[in-house]
Length: 108
Image (cartoon, rainbow, N blue to C red):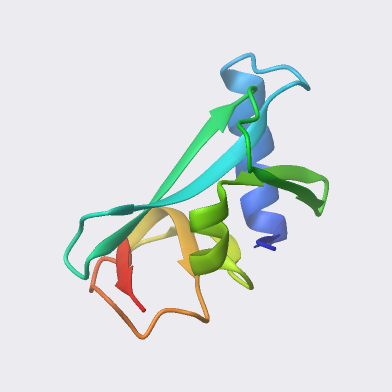
């Protein structure tokens, strides 16, 4: 399961409201090959579940993971930073053995 911090929840709800997404949409979190460390995070809104998807809710946010991504992301915390060093979603992944300096890719 991926947990969602209050800051990430607020930003997700803000984006959904600004982009006119209705309640049928959820956050799809995935892992794909690429990035400095070999695997990168992908985050977008979707409203269609696929076969094998793992769907759950945390902190009022519906999250969907494909089965491969679930194996890499189990226990991950999704956060949002709006600090001076950069704005954006951050993944705190306990399964990552290393991450790149930008935080957008990892290795296990």
